[in-house]
Every structure is written in C-alpha cells, then in structure tokens.
Length: 462
Image 1 (tube, rainbow, N blue to C red):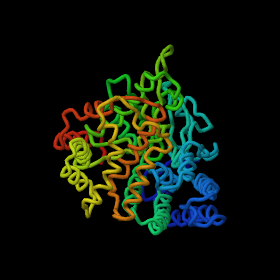
Image 2 (tube, rainbow, N blue to C red; image 1 turned 60 degrees about the vertical axis):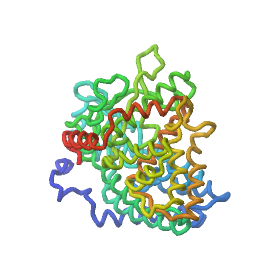
Image 3 (spheres, helix red, strand yellow; image 1 turned 60 degrees about the horizontal axis):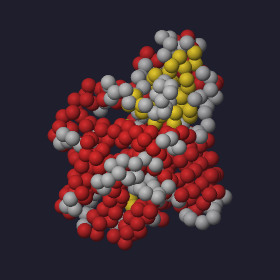
Image 4 (spheres, rainbow, N blue to C red; image 1 turned 180 degrees about the vertical axis):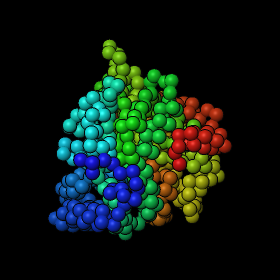
C-alpha cells in the first residue's frame, strides 16, 4: 500500500510529459479519429451535405471516449461561429455536459496516488459516483472533516503527455482546415490553446486563481466563488467548497426582471475583472454558472462563479485595445480602430481588411454601442449567435485575406460569444452600453498595469 503514496520528486512523477505517454496517446487518438473518418472520409469532416450529422456524431463518439485535451479543444472550436458546420458545433458542444465519468476503481486509485493510501479517512464522506465529468477530469461531492460540503475535482491520468500528443494531431486537423478554407490562418490559435491547456492541468494554479477571484469579489453577497481547501488538494486534485445552485437554463421561463438581474451579474462577473485586472473567465460553458438564494425568493439572489482552470491573463496593452476599439467604433474614429487592431497584433492592415474586421467588431460591440434597452441580438437563436456575421467575414477574407488571428484574440472572442449566447438563452434586456461604461470607470492602461502586477504577485500567479 505504501506504493500508493504520492511522490514529491518531480523527476519520479509518473505522469510528467514523457515519450511513452505521448506515443500511447498518439495511437489512441489516431485510432479514434480514423474510426470517425473511415466511413465518411476525412474531407467530409468540414463539408456540408446530408452526411454532416452522421459524421459529427461519429467524431463526438471518438473524442468523448478518449477524454482529454483534443476533446477540450474541440469544445473550444465549437464555440467559434462558422468555424465548423452547425451539426459539428452542436455535437461537440455536448461533449462537456455529457462526458462519461470514470468508475470507482479508477477514482480510488487516483485519490490514493494524490493523498496517500488512507485518503478516505481525510473526508467525512466521499461519493463514489461523479457529480460531473468533463474533458480533463471529473468532480465528486464530499464532506470535509469540519463538515463543509466539498467539490473534489480529480484529473484524469497522463493528461500532460496527452496535451502534447493531442496538440500535434490537432495541428494536422487545422492544417487540413487551412488548406481547404484559406481565409483564416488559425496557427496562432493552436499556440494559444496549447498554453491554456497546459495551465489548465495545473490545479495548484487554478486554486490560486480561484482565491484571486474570491478576493476580487469579497464582501459581495451577489457574486460568490468557491474556497479552495489546500490540505486536500495537489497539482492534480483540487478540493473546494461546494456552492449549491441551479443552472442558468432553469431560469429561461423566469420573470423578466429575474432574467435581467442574472444577466447583469454575469456581465459584471466577466467584464469587471477584465477592465480592473486584465483577466477573464475564459470558459463560456453554461455549466460554469449556477445561481442560488434563500427559500421563498426567486432562486437567483446570487451568482456562483465556477471552474477557474481557463483564466486568461491579458497584457494591459491588449485590454487598452479593447477599450480603444470600443471608443473608435462609438465615435467612428478610423485611426483609433486601426490602432486598436494593431495593438492586438493584427498585421498587414489596410482599409479593406479593417472594413472586414469591423464587420465582426460591430457585431461583438453592437450591444455596447447602442444606448437603449435591448437584447444582445434581437430575433437570433443562441446557437446561431454570430454565425451570420462570421460567414460574412469569412467570405470577405477569401477575397481580401488571408489573415492570421492573434493569439490573445482567441479567448476574448470565445468568451464574448459564450457570454452573449447566455444572454440570449435568458432573453435578457439591458442598456448594455450603460453597464459597460460603468465597468470602465477610472480605466487607464497604466492603472491597470499597476493593479494587475500587484494582484498577480500577491496571488502567486505568473
């Protein structure tokens, strides 16, 4: 049983990135993708036609069984409008909510590897069945020795090797897409996704970011963040307080004022850390937001903000570019628009490319530019949010492009789309411009840089 105790020597860590792990993963992923492609052909993965639905289901089945980074990346691509056909986006979006969990024998071994052979004695109780399962790990409910309800997040084995192997195969898939399309060069997207996936495997980092967010929203009863439990956590195991709440979609038929209040909380929880600290909650999955409140109320007195593995920290100049483009669009200032795109890293800008980029920018910023109460996109279903504009951009770039998407843009765009879709699910109505202007009060690039440096240093986050 002593062999079950966790090793503290990094050189002896059995799950460090290693060649044997990469080769094993490469074979599994290759077999899964081949199985999905054999019946329908690799090209049909990105083609229209009646076979799309069957192909999408086959790919989802292959990736869902594999778990891990490639599945996570597929979820990310599914949230970028018009990057994949609708059938693929719908199937891949389901991966995160319906990923199959690993069984109790696996859990028992993993917990022993992280906390030692007597790990069960460190909890009052620990549920055998997972409460949720996703691409990189699964969550179990437990009770701490002091009686606190816990969520225990356990990482799947060999994820570090899987990241490197899957990224290599993902580059091949993206290379295929690039050759078939040619309007957008997604190579920087792979670099960005790779860096974020490596961060997401570090549960110690996630715990520090969770504490950072908890400090940012401390003293507020309407936005709550779990508290990490360091004594029951490791680099691949994260124990945190359980926050009871209901999912966002359970409020779709709630009174309008309830749905509007939920949307305002989501807006603030996303934008305030961005404009004050230069960080965003980069995973827009609806399961990362729940809502709770006292009995007798509407059940949405406060927002529970969950899952801090995918937190994107932006350089202050990028955030300043976000504000600059907003003001440039608001004032129809072409020079400000160009400078904003340049500060983000878009290269080889000319009038034609700026016009194309503005099609997308006016969609993303549209609700913020309109000084009235409205939905984020009238008469647009959540699943179609951004797809029409993305199609226009892709069509124009085939003539004016190609263009390389800067890496920082990836998670900003992805999270903004996810947040907008949440607002559409709710049918929320606000003066979004007034909400955004409130988040910008006192904003300056220098002030942001100073606050960010101080807060990250205090949190121990690089």
